[in-house]
Image 1 (spheres, rainbow, N blue to C red):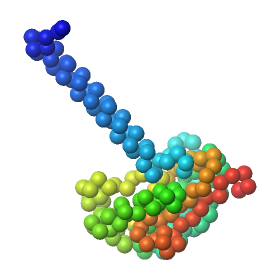
Image 2: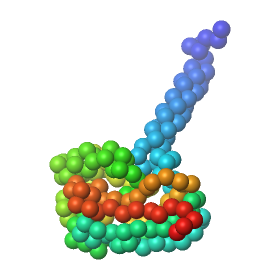
Image 3: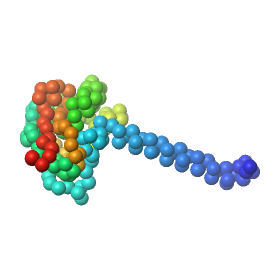
Image 4: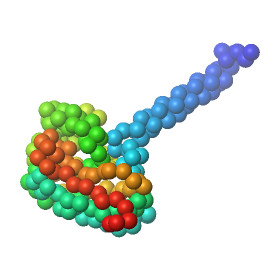
Length: 184
């Protein structure tokens, strides 16, 4: 058995190896948790690569509506969504399902309660402080007049859509759908 106390350099190397191993395990765990969140559910597709974009679709968000309300997509297609908030309120374009949106409701309500978001603005500093940056690949949360981008690769099947998760907006009808398949 090697005595690490006899050679301080060996002890330091052993400690560095333990630290790097622990850091690697922690990073792998964090990545697996991040990929398991609602924004990266394999049933709704996955973040797309800019180099693989098949086409660009502009989506305008206004008070309680999207234009267009329905978007035709092909299985496996990668689309760049140019999302424009033409309204007077904060809006979100979020690709998901009723289940993912319902699961996100409490976070959005907390953002309103704790001053990270108002009806007309986002407090990015407060979002950073709270660890709620809202930077998922399937979503663009925008103030009035802002433009954002979502690049998304669609799954082979399933029922997915897009909605605004700002409290009260989806409930007021601010959601749209993807028509997935060859009939598009």
